[in-house]
Image 1 (cartoon, rainbow, N blue to C red):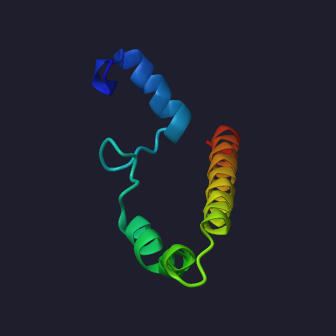
Image 2: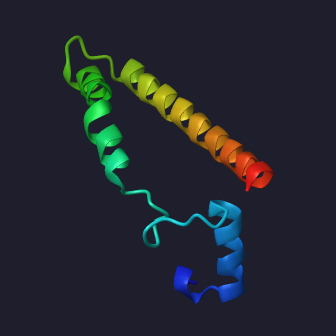
Length: 95
């Protein structure tokens, strides 16, 4: 089932629940905006260099490098999920 094949009522309910009526510019809910490119492209560049150095530098310890990447993925996932729920609570309370 594709996203466009969903019932319009379900889509409107999802829009209200996920964006509280403040949808983005298009189907991506405003994700690829200027701030996104700034954060992921420029501000996180030292993190990208650090990860590359873990795998390309010497002495190489692939197990420790993979563990470091795993920690970064877990921390990022926890932050995104927590902020999603915080956004939903703020949306329910104030909007």
